Amino acid sequence: MAGESERRLQELVDGLPDQVEGWRRGDAEFYGPDDLYRYINGGAELFIAYQFTSVVSQPYVDVNDDEIRLDVFDMGAPSSAFGVFSHSRESVDRFVAPDAESEYAGGLLHFWKGRYYGSALAYPETETKKAMIRELARRITDRIEGDCRWPDVVAILPVTDLVPDSIRYFRHRAWINDFHHFADENLLNIGADTEVAMARVRTEAGEAPPAVLVAIRYPSAATAAEATAQFTQALLPGTADGLRQESDDTWLGCLHSDDIVVIVAEAPDRKTAKGLLEACERSRDHVRRGGHDDE
Amino acid sequence: MTNDSKRRMTRREFIRDATVATVGGSLLLGSQAPVFAELSEDATVTRSEVVLIRDLGVLDGEGEARHEVVREMLDAAVSRLTGEDDARNGWRRLIRPDDVVGIKTNAWTPIGTTAAVEQSLRTRVLEAGVSEENVGIGDRDILGDPVFDRATALINARPMRTHHWSGVGSLIKNYIMFVDDPYNYHEDACARLGEIWTYPAVAGKTRLNVLVMFTPQFHTAGAHGFSPRHVKKYHGLIAGFDPVAVDTVGVQIIRGMRREHFDEDRPMSPSPGHITVAGEKYGLGNADPQQIDLIKLGYDENSYC
Image (cartoon, rainbow over all chains, first blue to last red; front, side, top):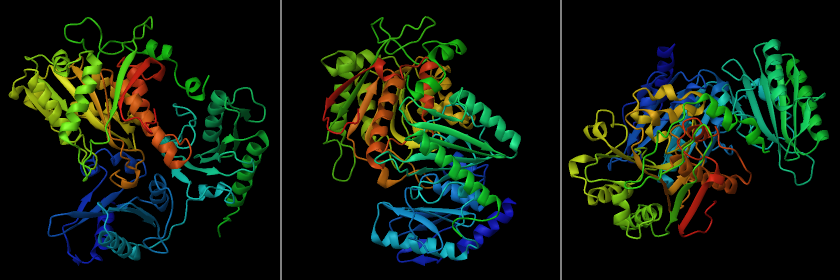
């Protein structure tokens, strides 16, 4: 599997030029889950948590021995590539190509397409370096089959009022508190076999900040029920309808159906919280029927 | 009661489950006063002093830290922390001539501890009477290092930045290189990092903690975690004897920068809970801002704390 992954990565970088402006292509390096920490010390865990398979690091060096590296990660599945990209991006541009989601800012480029996530740093930023990493990334994405289709669980979140580019996707407990601090403990039993989509959503309540919506798909209805019970006992005790006003006056709510749990937080009032949960339920039914709002 | 406080384990629960000792601290030389907080079963809490010093002149036109300005900042911090008007006397209260001193730095290159901080610390340690062969500066190579192996005193210095897995790179986290299996401390957003401070190579040896806040990074992006647009010039150093309290102030500043940038109070991801755990479970200091006496020196615009 790793061999096949590296072979495919090698094919991707084979499409890169030997020379760009004054930059000469060096020897590519490959890393897998066992030695990724040697390459990105202190940062490997993020990729491991997203089912990372292997990475190729392609250096370019100029006459001053300055180096630019283009890293292309095989994340095993498009959902994981999207997940690691969504983890930190603030916005989405089409800097690399129309069919790849990317973000370029201040010399840092990262992008995803298919099951691949890429990153390159042109720092200190110059126009030449910026153009160079754009061209290298474009050549990579041209060779990637697939598209930037988001994971199905994301479609449970009602598309209309989502804050642009706030969507997160993960399968690890570490990031459930991204927008709202639910608990330090893993109340929702989030693990490698659960899919989490999370986003901020605008409400109609005047100046109120966007609420937080979370949709979690569990491997079974039973595990979803177990997590719901744990979450409810800790944060929604004694509520008949799964809604509760928090100490800061915002509303927290939870809705469970089959293998899906939906949570709303920071809603400005009960009606909004209930409405958002119901909107997610409708989206879920739509997804179950095989449709997607963005089709 | 805040949401945070009601959802965390209570301090009493932490204390019940923990072996609490003053493992990370030491005594100010010539004094009976603990240099930072200690927790005990009856919950006697000592307040922690933290110095935040900022100087707009600390970075030159290239963004490099100026040695002479850094030395002045460190001297001012040590002077305030030790209560010695003459900083040289302050350093002598931290370091004995017969000490073997390891200066634990951080080698992450995009935002480093800086040579100015490392060499300023080394200079002051030498001036306190320590011989050259008994002073070392290290990070990833400290296991087996002849100075760190014999160290009787440690100075902990590093920059603060957000981190994909631990919330922030902190002073508490900086000692992870004292173990040969750092990957075993990654569980639960690195919550167990404080335990390292209980190990013999470290326990009771730290004489000073310095959090470098010249150009902290308040959000992480990309494969290697360095995102230039999320780096902000702050021109500061935070120093103290209590690593948890110093980290807590650093996190407060990072949170302020995030609030300003994102225009919302966006939590760090993941939460830097290892700092709280270091204080509450391992007794390394105060994570409660109410127990921290923050002393601000120098420039104080947009300090976020």
